[in-house]
Amino acid sequence: MKVRFIAGIVCPKCGSQDSVRIHIAQEGEVDEQLRDCVTCGHEERIGQGAAARKEVPTRVNHSDAAAVQEVEPQVLKLK
Image (cartoon, rainbow, N blue to C red; front, side):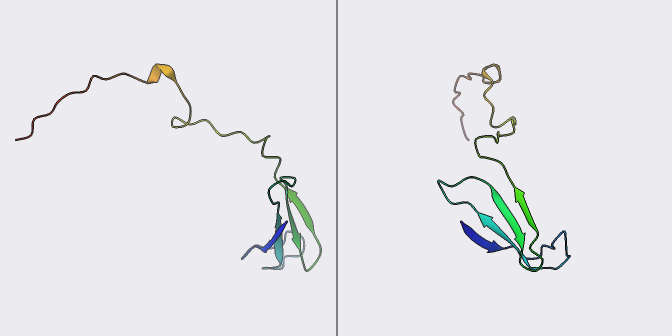
């Protein structure tokens, strides 16, 4: 796991600033992040497995066959 301090964040338990660090999972490890405060020891688990996350459908990333139109190419003349 990588451990990084989060700049500017305030601990929700003790209120100290710049004392919260995050443990980031490496490839092959459980995809869960842990935040902890070095001042008071407060721990907080965040995130779920990457497999459980789903991409939010938008008009860009979904495939709707009815929305795709075949258009005949046109030749433009420039003067």
